[in-house]
Image 1 (tube, helix red, strand yellow):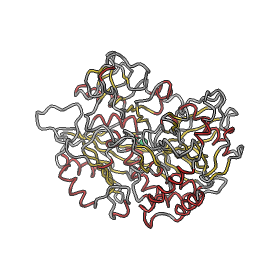
Image 2 (tube, protein in one colour; image 1 turned 120 degrees about the horizontal axis):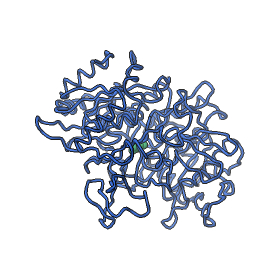
Image 3 (cartoon, rainbow, N blue to C red; image 1 turned 90 degrees about the vertical axis):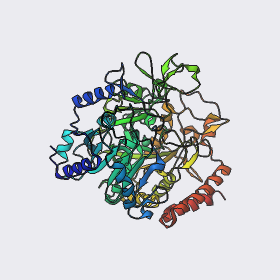
Image 4 (cartoon, rainbow, N blue to C red; image 1 turned 45 degrees about the vertical axis):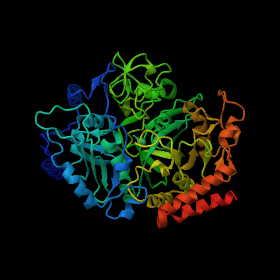
Length: 589
Ligand code: OXD
Ligand code: MN
């Protein structure tokens, strides 16, 4: 019995449309997780691993990543979705979705998941309810969100965002299920910003299916943030403590699969410096009366990219996933453990690959899919920040924007002020990764790393950032930085990255404290090379200078590219962005 009239009415409506075999209201208990996991073992979706409480699963090759071409923002007016989103009239979209949803849960259980984004009882948290016909999704939501009976109780009389999900694979009577049900034909990830509603059909994977994440926390979240005066961002949140015990929090935006999880849990290469993790993917940020920006992590777990994660690159992530973790599309070892490219230097001699085929190092193909993931509770991170569940959030002193760029963008520089910082966010370009279906390694504009996640017109989004900045003063506003860990020379990375990134963070920390001068340049404030602490690092002479170099030929080209790009936003492009572009151009004449 659902003791929430609006929720009950919605569930009844979905039951009538999707015609599931039964309804299960999730209580979020351990017993519930275990019984669903057992059912998933029985249906061959899960294989129990030797890691306690952990499971291996693999999808079908046509369902391995976010599907941006099938993701829609169905605002009433097309111009409100803007030029960076796919749009369809909401009524037209419903005409497409309704026949697909009719009977789509036949033979399946309809699960009702009440969830809360952000700490329960925080004024900055929001409620959602996901309906899904996938037990795999329920198990992931158990880890990724605060969900279940206590959320339903706290939700009484309150508004929630309805998120409807179906894998789109009804079961005929007597038909046995496949291990990864999903629609072979249709995939739609649809957002109705005015109704604040999400409908996802056809995929069971990651951001397409765990609707608390990209769909609600970012796409609907950004719409709510604009309306209510806050920011929903594709950003990690981390606390940095210096050897004197002084602590500052940073938020950092990078496109998908560009190392946010690694940075959020960085193991410092500099003695005495410490990083603690508040979140690795999404930040909800609001200005308070004191003119400072505060951030909460709406999520409860990590949905991290597995390939490349190792004790060398991210030891804390490796410790986080030692137990109670779901692994999807990694390889399985004969001993019942997991492996992926980059986990160890030498691969095991024999594996089951992510498609369930036997694999050896000379198979000539990867063992784990490049977008293979782990789903793990944030509370298991050995460096989880003590304030990660603080209902008021943590105060942000620095904002970092980054992308994957082989050239042009220096290792680090700082914006001259807030509006210039907004311009740096708006100017991010990055090479595409396996997090989304499509071509890899192609340079594309990804403003604020929000290209696939902004629920409204990107020009209005820039303007919202500029407006929000007016709530602070030069003294209280976070400093804004740009970083590029991926610059190359002669095909080789110029900067070691990972734990050594603390050297760059240290400079930011000192800039915020007013302890370092910085050098004014045509693109912003650069470090004096001697201000980047290289102690204990073997780096070739001149390499740091190369990493920090502002090459006028490359920057003329960058300014030209931005000049060609920004008109995309038409009359919604804020004058402040045009002004910053004009300054950049002028500085390179
Ligand atoms: C993610 C993504 O899964 O950005 O976090 O794709
Ligand atoms: Mn992400």
